[in-house]
Amino acid sequence: MSPEEAASGGENEVQEVRARRILTEISSRAWEHPADRAALQALRRIPVFDEVLRKLFGFLGEKPLRLAFQANAVRVSPRQFPRVHSLYEEVARTLDAPRRYDVFVSQTPLVNAGAYGMERPFLLLNSGALALLSDEELAFVMGHELGHILSDHVLYRTMTVLLIRLASMGFPVVGVAARAVLVALLEWYRKSELSSDRAGLLAVQDPEVAMGAMLKMAGGGDATQMNLEEFLAQAEEYRKGGDVADQVFKVLNLMGSTHPFYVLRVSELRSWLEAGEYDRILRGEYPRRGEPDPAYEEDLQAAARAYAEEAKGVVESVAEAARKVGEAFREGFRR
Image (cartoon, rainbow, N blue to C red; front, top):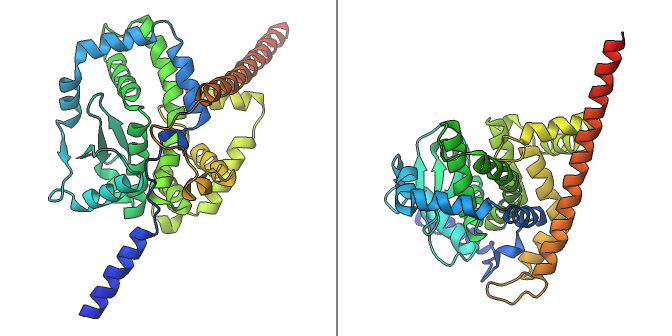
């Protein structure tokens, strides 16, 4: 490569970085989904919720928990996974993170990532994500996980993962109360993904990259063999299609899952784009950290009401499906 070409490449790289708007002092409220806030509000109203979490926190402690997650991982630095380190630094700059959180890479083929911890949260990337995703797509994933940390999701998300693991092992601490909390945590956990998808998009500031990353993570294949427009059409088909029984099965399919389906996440992200919220943020119209927000409680109440209406609709759908099943059984016995 000639010096001129090298200089040109460096200039292009600078231009690419400058194309991203640094979201100075952005508050996590800018990207948080109303269903996320409402679900968390509903969760905190469960009488045993805080008690169970406090007991688990006291039992496990911060240090052993951190060691358990990091024992089989490599800490990212300028000398270890320098590509990941460079991408993360740019993501943290773009979202104006108030501090740098540790990033670790764990050896597993599953294409995924996570944000965990309590007092000292950290990001954990699966090696499968590094192998499958492009640099920009990986930046989206890290922006998504950083969004969880900046939205103060990590305590509850960490507790969810721990409860799942303890429940699968038949651990005595996971009694009836803890299992009830786990069901509620899983419902919120899925809603929190919708918020962090928005944070990931703001980190890369390219909708095609964000939705393309989710397409790859859903299909796990070569991007040349997949089509984003087809995937978006599939998302709309899933969202709108089906009768009452189909809606019930959609709910049941998600009940044991920590993440909403990728087709729904893409559809939700697209709706946020079409509503103009993303463009407003890039124009600098967003809440800042530390700003007074007198309407925040009202916003939480409105979101809680919307969430309650959504939950009511699901319950009614389940009740209607159960009624039809009962009628079908009775009709069968008559024959």
